[in-house]
Image 1 (cartoon, one colour):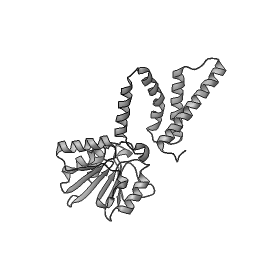
Image 2 (cartoon, rainbow, N blue to C red):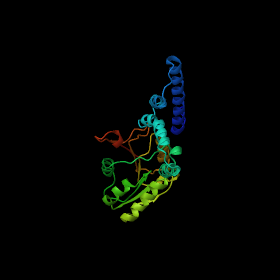
Image 3 (cartoon, rainbow, N blue to C red):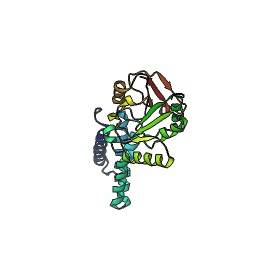
Image 4 (spheres, rainbow, N blue to C red):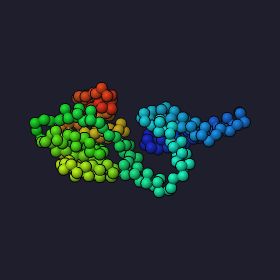
Length: 252
């Protein structure tokens, strides 16, 4: 099961937890001659799903999602909302999480503390080309652009909604940041002097192999929060805010 994509892995966990909850409910009915209520079954399924998620060492945010999934679905069913509400919610999720199923990289937003640490690593006196892989709403290059007038800043994002929001923000600000709607795996990283990524543990092995093959000597590869497994960084910039704000830096 560990080889499954996290989405399919989670589906298996939900189904297994549902089967276990129904089995336990049946046993309780036989033993006590009193069937459990629907909500008792629902919360039992959520607790079992969360426990299975933790046992299979899914990322920390998955157990709460597993616990709340079935109760949320049941509440939505009883809310009596018109069908178009669910369609709109689905379309918004598609626009923001376009390829998460395939890439296993959800929409992560970094914070200003990480941006300030990143700025301290960039060249101060010479031109450079910087790209943010999975640039989200564009916060990183927008923050860096006015601080490094000799830099050229790029972002790449495959999800339509974040990419469009970034383009609109750039237009409104009169920014020179160029946002590409591309999968970073299809880019040639040799074009850039600094490559920054805030992706996910699942994406790091492939991205590291790409960086090793494509990036030129002396270029900087910087990952926020997620190290490249088995590759000792040349520098680690840790913050008091915790691992989510730690930068791992390699000189290629």
